[in-house]
Length: 102
Image (cartoon, rainbow, N blue to C red; front, side, top):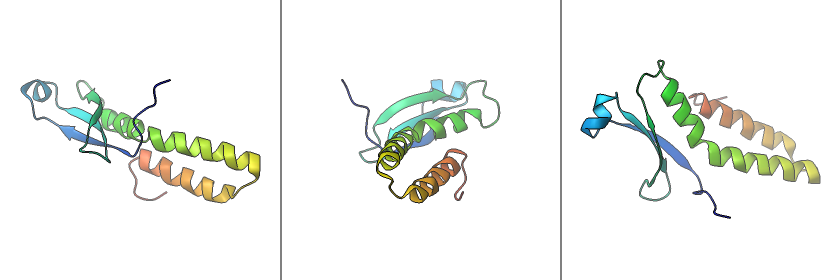
């Protein structure tokens, strides 16, 4: 089974091409570890205000969400430090919502 690109990922807006500018730009989801390899591209065409950016934030957070789900499962089975996990979940949710702090 093929694995996904490991995180962290980030999102960046662009209007670098004529086509991108015609539709209001694009959101690039990129590998933040390595030369910013493009993982996905979201068009900003006909978006409700902020909707494409919110979608880009959510997609960029996918590796962290997967990691937290794995941590929750591991801690639930081994009665680990679940409060640390809950703090991490709150921080990730704030990141997805575009906030600096939970």
